[in-house]
Length: 127
Image (cartoon, rainbow, N blue to C red; front, side, top):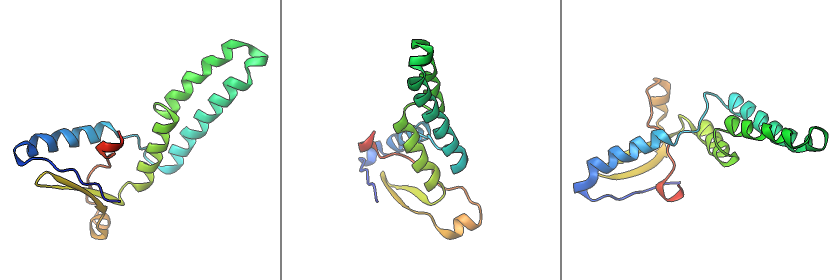
């Protein structure tokens, strides 16, 4: 998938800086896939447990549901976006040239040399 954003040249530097700072803020990835899956299992367990325990404990069991939002780092959708970011980390590269940004496959040489790649971001149209 290739995402292309066009920006007028006069606004290029400002728009590129704003897009990069927004990309850093929209990072839901974990350090590893197993850690991310563990957070998801904890979140689902808390939601299911809070609903299942309502007949036994009463409405107080629903107090566990907000803890699931902490495990998910927001909502279940945020967790799914983070899973995609965690899996694709290091495999995709964002390149911006003259105000036009594209999402491409990372170069194997850059991965082998442990060079940092561009941050993973969500296209502006899907926010």
